[in-house]
Length: 111
Image 1 (cartoon, rainbow, N blue to C red):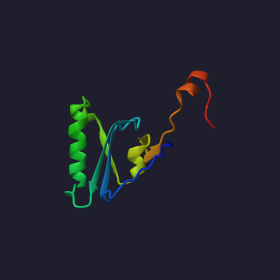
Image 2 (cartoon, rainbow, N blue to C red; image 1 turned 90 degrees about the vertical axis):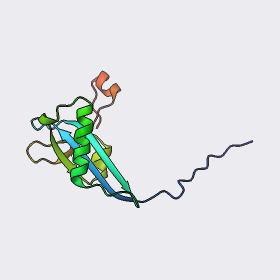
Image 3 (cartoon, rainbow, N blue to C red; image 1 turned 120 degrees about the vertical axis):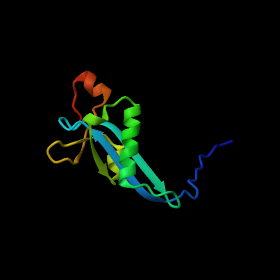
Image 4 (cartoon, one colour; image 1 turned 45 degrees about the vertical axis):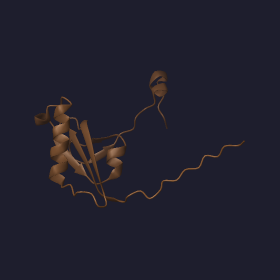
């Protein structure tokens, strides 16, 4: 008997709002904690200040000194799903390329 893989996403709720909150080192731009908030249609509204407050609360619980970190907020899904840093001069998200372990071990750079 041949098996078929059949999948269906069904009737997923639509996304009504999305927040990305990055807590970062202002000198280097390194993101130390990243928090995302996804609100679905019919869900409770989350304000920007609530998203920031929750990010700081969770970062503190994770051991970060939030007094030493700045925050940057975005509505761009890519900022919360791929590696980024914050440019210290512009304060904007900048994509970061992550090298593969094999490239690091062999000293190769991906083109």
